[in-house]
Length: 294
Image (cartoon, rainbow, N blue to C red):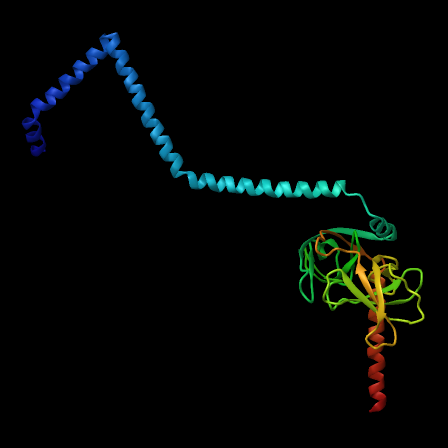
């Protein structure tokens, strides 16, 4: 405290000068209109400049947050735009004769609409993932169709998604027939061209022409008969040379596949029960056979 008082005593004339200067300026600007207007104008300009500099500095410091919000909003707008474009395309799409035929054939079946969320097209064994699963009623061995015809068969299911083995998988084998002729076989993919598959074991006396329609045979519970698969591109020899081999151009374009339907077979539970009984009977007969041998 003594040091502070010594400091005031040492510079008391200076502080007195500052006080008198302040009083004189107050009297000058308060009781003289011109000087007062000059003071207030200068003060306002100075305050405005300081506020502008402060705002610009704060805006610069907040650029990161602003950019983050703009990026988020831009992402949402992009997603909304893509969704609206897709919906507009669906609403403006005119069904092809193949699509009309598929719808007519499946008129008595329950169809579950699904969207392809993952689709491989460049592998030997391709797979498709759709956005419907067991919670939606999807089960393994259900057929999947699209606007171009047969797509594949459900292989695995999760609560909300399912894995589909498409026609473009070397493990795929779908019972099919030539429309109007009755000759049937199993459709398999060559593993080369995406839109080409083949059917072996067609009898040599079969008179099949280029452009003939290949469809599901209905010999399994997966697909009803008559679902479009593709058209015959050419007729050649099977690897064994004893029958014909049909080169098929598929109706489904897997490179652009987006919307599909799962065929909810109404008699699937009954068919599964019959298969289970048949398996039990086979196991019982095998056990009896072993007992007789012993």
